[in-house]
Image 1 (tube, helix red, strand yellow):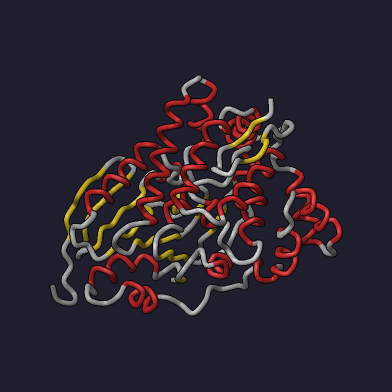
Image 2: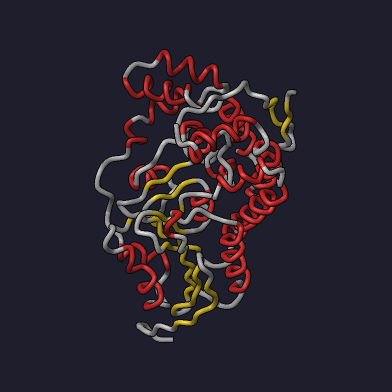
Length: 350
């Protein structure tokens, strides 16, 4: 195949996921636009099936993008998980999480470069679709976060692997607070690998297809800009983040925030006080445990945790406050989490 040749072949289309091959590049497009591409079990299965079908077929790369002008992926359809819990149907939730985590592992181990175009909101499950791949491209519209402690859950989709490996205490800070990252922040942490401005990011699929002999990284750098507009907030507060969030316990993190000077520490401490105590405790221990585990070990531990956490009062209440009644005023209970054993299995207090 010569430069400039573009071969296009449709592989599979569903109502919410479109897949095709363009010039030796597999393209997967999330198309649940009205729900900001919140992932359903069927969507995850469709993506996983495409990747399985394309494995060892000679593709040069796989690209994941979105048809939404607002979001890459706003996360998993977690309200459906809460409804399953209330209906006494844990099997449906188990299917969702086990399928999602299997897909996360496949992306992390995929045999050709996996490229994600993050142009808009990328939260929770959207992070799991992107950060495990080789290339994570952000535009100026990108907003990334793991906000699970605010809904009585915990950072999953392999977060115990990727957050625990961020420099200093950045992963603990991001996992506990759910703080939103700009493009500059994502590049600073290494969660993003390239910045391409809003106008040019849509050109990536054609550029990859049109230059089959050029390395993927070179194509992305050719389209990219030196840096996003604006500075990284994480970089600005890095010293305080590392000091406060390197503490071993929540109580010590709170004490260090209380002792720190300035608005950032006060605002951060106040934000933590509004989050699920159980989720915060679980997150601290899970990230510490995950630092020396493989991605598959982390995903297996997270799957065990989901089975219990989705049945806890804090999870039911968190989803009610955030997504059902939308009063943003959850009433949290006392933590029932009793720690992780050496295998990552949770202990619960009754």
